[in-house]
Image 1 (cartoon, rainbow, N blue to C red):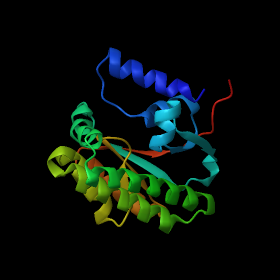
Image 2 (image 1 turned 90 degrees about the vertical axis):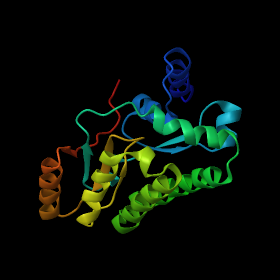
Image 3 (image 1 turned 135 degrees about the vertical axis):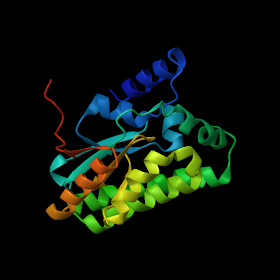
Image 4 (image 1 turned 180 degrees about the horizontal axis):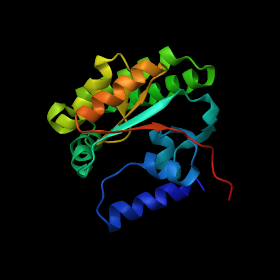
Length: 199
C-alpha cells in the first residue's frame, strides 16, 4: 500500500505532465488524517515516505476557503522544485523546516494544543511565502490568508494554492470569517473530517 501513492503520482507526472507532490496521493489512498514524513533518504531508497494514522477525533474545528475557479498550480511548483534539485541552500533548509512543522503539528494535535498548532500553521505559510514569493503565490491566495489573519485566525495553504485551511474555535469569529470570505468572492466550508472508510 505505501507504494500506491508513488505509482499514482508517477502516472500523473510522466503520462499526464502534471507537476504535483505525494501528499494528495497519500491521503487519497489512506483517507482520514495522516502524518507524512517525506525524508529524502526514505523516498529515494524505497520510493515512499513514512506514513502513520492520526485520529480524526484529535482535530480542532477546521474550515476551508477556496477560489471558485482556480488555475492549475503546476507553475507554483516548478521554480522551487528546480531550485531544490539544483541544491539551493535556502530551499533545502525550507523543506527541512516544513518537515519540522509537520512534527510540531502532529504533537500539538495529539495533546490538543491549539495555540501550538495555530503557530505552526502561520509559520508554515510565512516560510512558503518567503521561498515562493508573492508573485508566484498570487493575489487570491494572499487575500484568503489576509482575511484569516485580520481576524486572528491561523491559516495556511491546503496544497499549492487555490485554497486555504484554517482553524477557528470561536463561533462568532467563524461567522465573521464566513461573511468576509463571501464578500470577497471566495467559497467557504466548515470541514468534518472522517476516519478511513471501511472497505
